[in-house]
Structure formats: structure tokens, C-alpha cells
Length: 120
Image 1 (cartoon, rainbow, N blue to C red):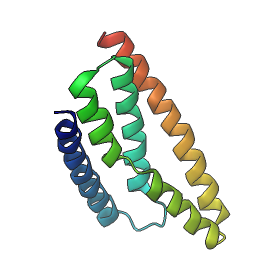
Image 2: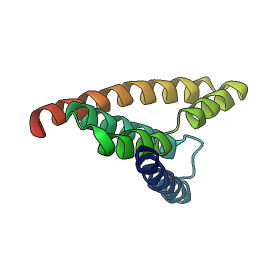
Image 3: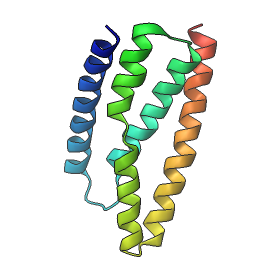
Image 4: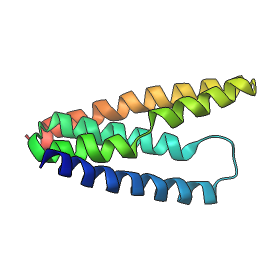
């Protein structure tokens, strides 16, 4: 049952990420990876919320491991940073790293705080 919960969550997470990526890329004409930043920051918020609300069992497996595991993307984030580095685009590299880490941590903290104070 655990593997099924993770698989179902992962399916919907991957589809959601694909849809957001397609939507954002069609509407932005910049090198800055707004789609990846958006999914990683919102995923950080959601996982913080789940952790703060102390959801466990199949719900945490489906949403935390499955959905968030396929919705967020550490590998794409690292590849995009490597591409900025290879192009010697320090402005985008530093801006993307700073935005991703600071907004991601802030979103996770906010999500956890909300989960603790409004769900428990």
C-alpha cells in the first residue's frame, strides 16, 4: 500500500511540474528559470506545511514523498546553475542561487509555522 501511495503522488507531482513548466516557459522570454524556482519554492512550502502539521502514514508518503519528490527538482536546479556557470553568467548564477535558497528556506519555515499553528 505504501508503494502505491507514493506512485500515485509521484504521478500527480510529475504532471503538475510539467504543466507549470510548460505554462511558465510559454509566457516568459528570459533565461531565468522561473518555472523551476516556482516549483521548488512552492514545494518547500508544502513540505514544510506537511511536516509542521505532523501528517504521517499514507498521506505523508503520497504527498511528501510521492508528490513533492516528483514535483520539486533538485537535479534540474543544479543543471541550470551549471549552465549559467559554463556561460560565465555570474549575475544569473548568483541571483538564481540566492533566490532559490533564501526563498526556499523562507517558504519551508512559513509552511511549517502554518502547519504547526493551524492544523495540529
